[in-house]
Image 1 (spheres, rainbow, N blue to C red):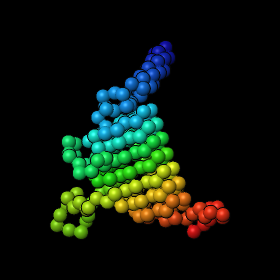
Image 2 (cartoon, rainbow, N blue to C red):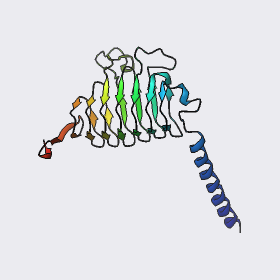
Image 3 (cartoon, rainbow, N blue to C red):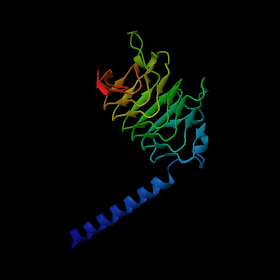
Image 4 (cartoon, one colour):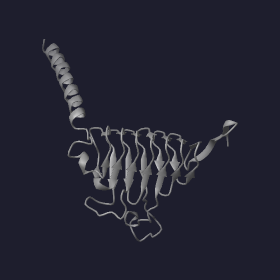
Length: 212
């Protein structure tokens, strides 16, 4: 009888937890009309940052277009620390109808520009700032390198675990394979994979998609 009562309690408790989590997901998401959404430099109609959120700061330098969904556990930051006055505005721009996968990080210090209709898989990391290592007498954490702008063109797709590093430029209608590391220029209408990412297919008018 005791085991049966415990099983019933677990089942009821589990259902209550699931319903509570679903409710939190609805009421704790960030949208354009609530106080958290109004901290952003722009937060377009129909956009949402799903609950639970990860680190988000200096929202005034982050612009989000319309109809964009940013998945749960995502980091969005502009500048090195909360309250910093950034030199560029926006530091991070995410276009219309984008989808940023769960657990991703967009960490901008200077300029990250993500076009319209860009989708990413889970756990994608995009940054315009990195650390140096050349001075062996100075901790790597204190060796910052100059920021270099990052741009991702309209209609592109970044697969699971993609890392986009400072200075990277991804054109329009580009597919980046899972777990790739983008360090340079990827031309429009191409497929790139690897670390560092290299183009393996390109679209050629009159021929279609061809191997490189």
